[in-house]
Amino acid sequence: MVLGPGEWSSADLAGRVAVVIDVLRATTTVTTALANGAAAVIPFADLEECRAHREKEPDVLLGGEREGVRPPGYDLGNSPLEYTAERVFGRRIAYTTTNGTRALAACRGAEEVLLGALVNRRAIAERLASGGRDATLVCAGKNGRPNLEDTFCAGAIIDMLDRLSADGVDLSDRARIALAVFRGQDAGSVLARCEHGRTLAGLGFGEDVDHCGRVDVVGAVGVLENGEIHAAH
Amino acid sequence: MVLGPGEWSSADLAGRVAVVIDVLRATTTVTTALANGAAAVIPFADLEECRAHREKEPDVLLGGEREGVRPPGYDLGNSPLEYTAERVFGRRIAYTTTNGTRALAACRGAEEVLLGALVNRRAIAERLASGGRDATLVCAGKNGRPNLEDTFCAGAIIDMLDRLSADGVDLSDRARIALAVFRGQDAGSVLARCEHGRTLAGLGFGEDVDHCGRVDVVGAVGVLENGEIHAAH
Image 1 (spheres, rainbow over the protein chains, first blue to last red):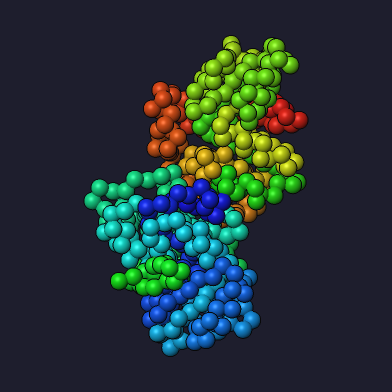
Image 2 (cartoon, each protein chain N blue to C red):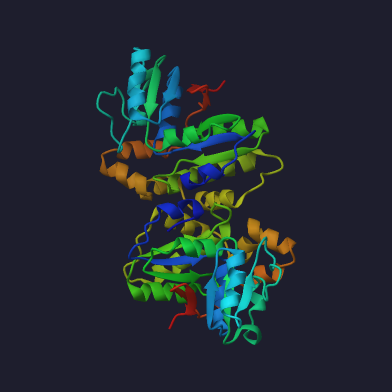
């Protein structure tokens, strides 16, 4: 379990399942897009590389954010509510965000990379419980630091995983920190109080924050493979 | 609030009070030594530099640990229970530990550097509340990662500070994480379950773990100034 970007470099992911968590909003948005039938999401850490991808693939949609808002020339911002079936069904999306896509890039060494959020918390826990491999939850955090909502989501996944596993789960200190954050409070109040939730509400994205705090409402699980995210089967 | 070593480099401490926290055991041990009348503790990140300090100052005691145990030729290990008034009253101690002294070194940019632990939790909170300056709690963590006991202690300090401050305190996401960890559980069970607590108990230091989990039992506060830790007045 990795609470924030400061620990990414020390995380050894070889042979493990990595679950990248960026509740506000990248992993919620990608999960929502896949649930609504997007064919693939192609993550880019760099804004210009993402934009340039359309030269290779003219039909691709461009989605993502910088400073929370849609970059110039992009088709979609980073609001999960934009990624409706009408917009994304059957489409491929080149996608970039500030923290989420960097966290994905940091997980290159893992055997499997999943995208976790509160909306698909149960689906993630079930996949981990049935897979039987060790998992590392990788919180995207913000600007090099752990944040409240990703830590809460990691705790929510661990709590469910513990309930689904006959033998319980081995808990690292980081996992115990996340569990304590989850068990003491509810998703709605965490997302309303956390730093990034307040920033997003201030930018007019209050509905996004509400949506990102809905727990277990989506069955889709994104899997990153060969540089593309597809819905797991 | 800095949960772990991965964030040290991004912490801007200029003009702030930094409280270094290494509950098991560095900041507990130094606080105990000062409470028992040690004249000064001189922290060293490097084992050999620490040892070499005796050439300059023949009367100095050597204290600290590597892998939890007393280094060859040292007078004292890293158990707070060794730092009795009989051993340390009036003495100067050259001191080195794995994580704690590195965290102290990382706080060079702060206006004031204090050593926080559970044993002096209330004294730390009172000093912060009366000082009126912004504080950053710097958890030493372990091997580049946040740990449970330092996060719990940070939460304990924040909780007390919040109670002592008429206007309450502004909470970052990291502070909210620490508060959640503190409010859900008690010191004894946290120290018994955390990774390093179990390691220390396995090395035969179970009594140390119990001692480090005693809350508000000491009034001494160590202040790092010009490379030496003295008891604050």
